[in-house]
Image 1 (cartoon, rainbow, N blue to C red):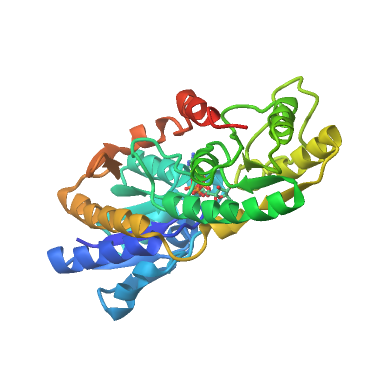
Image 2 (image 1 turned 90 degrees about the horizontal axis):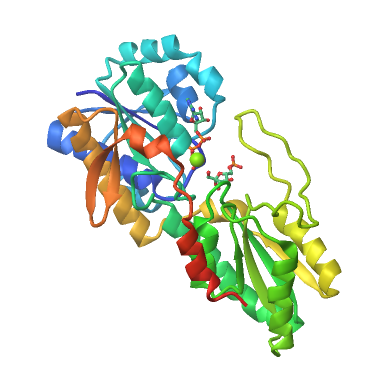
Length: 344
Ligand SMILES: Nc1ncnc2c1ncn2[C@@H]1O[C@H](COP(=O)(O)OP(=O)(O)OP(=O)(O)O)[C@@H](O)[C@H]1O
Ligand SMILES: O=P(O)(O)OC[C@H]1O[C@](O)(CO)[C@@H](O)[C@@H]1O
Ligand SMILES: [Mg+2]
């Protein structure tokens, strides 16, 4: 079989581990060549292809962050208007299958291609951990470990200066990184997009710490967090970007100003940003990504199209792409309530 592969959406640690495992398994187990497409879906539309071989170069990318293929976003309407070009690329290279590695957006594109008769196997990636059908996506563990390390370091400086520290982490619609990094690093408050925050309640939690004789407070905030309506705080409008995603205007900074005013205390903000997505994947992510790559190669040869490889408990299983994109996997209320027992 001739297999095409691409990575789309934001990059994340572990993408190269999937590519390596896919190429090695396809070449050694099935004698199937693999062709990579550069910079996400646009590489398929504009036919920017690179052959990938099971050589020393591929072997060494296991630890490398980012993606050797490059990634990117493309307006979904433009992508949907490019079906003839995609079909032409597939025909030109006589591809029998496509492996699409990406988040919920990429997998929606994979579902659309499936509906149009193109044989696709999906591999769920994203630091956001918001893809349905799989227990975890790779990239998430690395992002949580980077964010936790950073928050660990903030404890001492916050304490020395008796400050309130806000740490903004990624997570547009899902607060998984905030929840896990906050729990792992003993944050005193966690704010996620799923549960609109009341700024007065955040201040109350922080004030109570100082009243109890504590010297500082740390609050982890997901970038997509929003204030509860009628709470006396509104966020600046950012509109949407060319890819249809909401543009954020810095929720932690805006919260910091409101907290400083209400508490009359020093408040500082740290925005972790793309640091959470860079560098070497953790061992957990390397293993998960590698298993996904091996199983994607097997799935292609079994003809399991229109499905994604997914982690279910300890096993890698096939799940219909439809199920994976049906609902964004957000933090359930009870998981947030669990964390809230430790606020303050
Ligand atoms: N509904 C859709 N239909 C067709 N294509 C889509 C759709 N949604 C997204 N895509 C395509 O998939 C690309 C990647 O999607 P998106 O930017 O949402 O990232 P993602 O795959 O969810 O990864 P991440 O969230 O980790 O950045 C988009 O730029 C677009 O080209
Ligand atoms: O790299 P970009 O395009 O700025 O995207 C940032 C977004 O990508 C993610 O890292 C992954 O979806 C989000 O957490 C974040 O909002
Ligand atoms: Mg996404």
